[in-house]
Image (cartoon, rainbow, N blue to C red):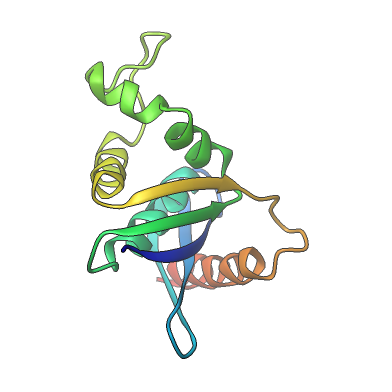
Length: 152
């Protein structure tokens, strides 16, 4: 039986491109308690969408065995690309979108698609900067990393 894991992610960027950060929270309910881990990272020159994808990739990459994952994000770009099959379609067409323009961030989507072949991942959109404490905490982590990257 696969472990059930919940992940929240968020990205932040000042400028587009500019310094950016991402934050993620992983939760797994063990027999005796809830295991929780926070992680974050950033880059000196990036985009908000790249940070949204990077948080999801980093969190999924930590899982050491195939899991059933519910991943919560306030990024419609991330959630729609994965849950509506857009990213898989772009990959199948050589990273070209339906309108014949190149898909952005193909190397990140390739990593994410590979992780989703290993894990069963359900992507859920949540409203950002609202009543979700885990999404708000991911935003705090992402902003802190963005600000740290801006000082580098």
